[in-house]
Amino acid sequence: MDNVLSKQEEIEKLHKQLTEMRLENYIHQDLFSLQLWLLLGCLIIPWFMWWFLVDREKLKQIWLFGSLMSILIYLLDGIGTELNLWSYPYQLLNFIPMLNPVDLSVLPVFHMLIYQYFSKWKNYIIANIITAILYAYLAEPLFVKLDIYKLTNWKYSYSIPIYILKAIFIKYILELILRQKSKS
Image (cartoon, rainbow, N blue to C red; front, side):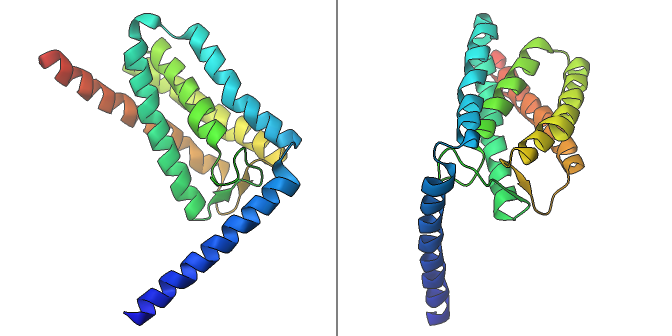
């Protein structure tokens, strides 16, 4: 029991050090950097775009889709970050070591628009395949070049099936929910 407690205390001590280092890094590197402004733009601009493009008749359904997608993206990003598959040298907020503007804005907004414009499964899957390829081979390398995203134990091509499968999974779950709602 003492060994477990000492390990936990060691983890807490290291976590405190990591938090202090992140704050120092944020103040001296991230704050007011070009990358921070790009991340801020990535957080805000997609939502303005979405607001003008979203089908107001299906707003609740599209919002639910986007919320479920955001949760899944955030979870997967947390796992990838924790497993040291990738990291983010620049942060919009220093106390969250994930790419929040992409997790909570860029990806969910574009997925919501795909969901809105491609309602039939075949078209939806094709649109997501194309989007996955664009994300993996254009957006991710751009973020790497801008030093916002760093691949540690990951390759761009690994992202493609994840982008596609998460889109299929969320649409499937939402359709189950909507079917249950229509039955009641």
